[in-house]
Length: 244
Image (cartoon, rainbow, N blue to C red; front, side, top):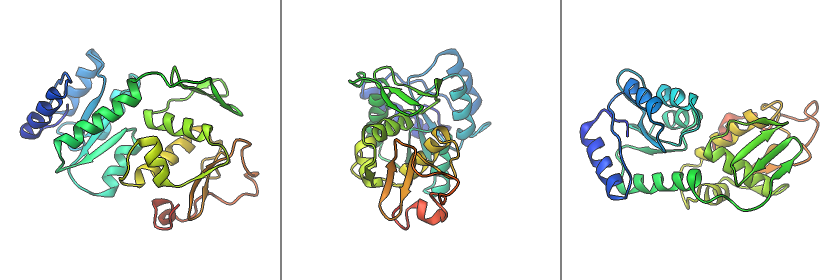
């Protein structure tokens, strides 16, 4: 738990402790990075605004040592803050003021996906992509893909449902397990996933945007990128105003 507000840290730590978690508290960014280097945490609840080093940089540095689930706390409801948190690899975020019970549920959800029972089934394959659900390994042309928990789950879901168009509401429900939430979470994760699996993320051939509906995974790689229009030419559409 990384938060420089002692009241927030005490309340959140208390709720997490009662839920059965062992909580280690620090109050600034450098201390969080140092502590994570000594003892790798199972999950980090990380405030965005911290003295010495902001939460975005803390997240980046902790992740340099390997994948660690991160739930980001943002003091403002500013969409830019939320998207920044997701773009540096946060698996979830909660906006202050928040319900400590909700935070506990979010922590439990992220941990289930990161350390729960291995998913059954054989490797999932499409072209140069290969995913091992049991070991939670993802390869592209034989090289390991550095996917976050949600990125892995999203790609696995796409591979299990090739050629099918899925709206962001359905993806949020079936990949995140949420019945409601900020749909920009899905948008950001799709964009980050494209950056890791597409040859040219600006002209995606695997994960296409179907205007007004959602996204489709094309196992054959879709149309020729030399003739295809960019999947998203209007940022407002990809943010959700047109239902992308």
